[in-house]
Image (cartoon, rainbow, N blue to C red; front, side):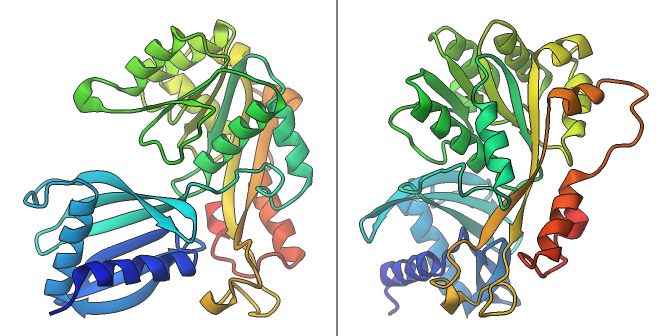
Length: 346
């Protein structure tokens, strides 16, 4: 009889050792299929018998406090793990399919330090990002597709803001991915009536200096975020747009007047993550080479602020340069990256 608890520990140990950000359990041709996402790439790890895969899914659901008897609806939960003295947060989510209930585990090291100094690929961007935190009020947006590191950038900005001087920082997130003792963190719970809109309304009554809204998803949240910035707060948030200039259009499409956007928008930060090349592996690192290249990925940016941001409010400004693509080409020409897989995303 296979010890399911030992198998689950083994999987997590391998995922942590190889620096995986996600662990997936699904099915493939009547087999259970385990995959790891390492430095942005999804890699096949192991194929196991389907009954064992189903027992693994049930085990992780139970450990995360989910309903193991419910297989028809998506569920999400979380659990904590201590690994070599480090606190690790595991976010568990399930998705039912006709043949198998798939499971995904997002891995967050709670002891990670979010530093603006190590986030960008090019050091010149560090100073630009730090300058954003000097604002006393206004709206700062971080944009990019899912998995581009937007949340990490937000946490890094908040960490730097908090370190510079004591401030009351309130975050509204769905879900809370990292816990910070110096922040007041609110998690979205729609069943209990806590949405981004209601959470932001309540946060404004708690005398915040800085607000972080995990994502602007609808007109009500957009209007509240802009109103908070208009009334003297510094507001950080994210939008799902392909580039920096698209954030202005998206806010306007949500019903925010251009005059208000122009008044409160301090900066838009568009970003992508690129996988760094390894001198020893002649490309992306082999899993056994993690010690040689600990910094597996870094971010490239297009930051609109000041005059560059003002030009995007002019109707006759003409076509603008794709600075994300420019940074990608620079990274490629300098040998930081070798794969062309990320070029199309810029």
